[in-house]
Length: 150
Image (cartoon, rainbow, N blue to C red; front, side, top):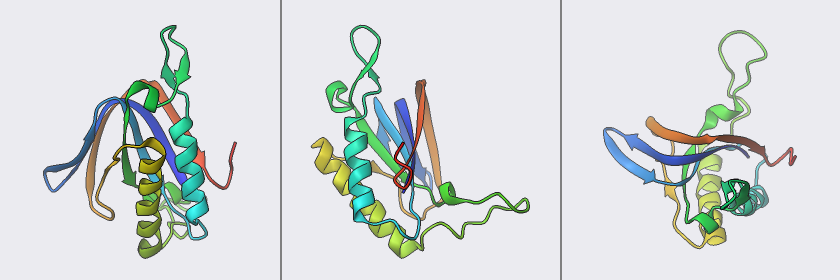
């Protein structure tokens, strides 16, 4: 699994003119799934995100996790995170998981994240054409990959 994690002061996702998910302070997360991802990848990523200390404490240092600041999470599926651009000018998406595998893990990941955080997670609509809006706070943006746990 690959995730682009952005600390936001607000974020929302719209499908066909309707807001389907919105948060204030928290994480806007774009999530990509590849063929060999499994439930253990989803569990690792959810646990890591729930404990990620990138929110400012009273001294202005990134020392607090999302629960400590009462933050929320908005997760949007993003198969293009596995786009390959090595050859030609048109990306190849051969490394992105098939929709049925990707959707199952996307939903499993969001349920793992809800369990880790003890609160609901906002979601986009899997496979839909979505319009995402956000205000990146900081800016703080992290790229995480369950196959490269740096």
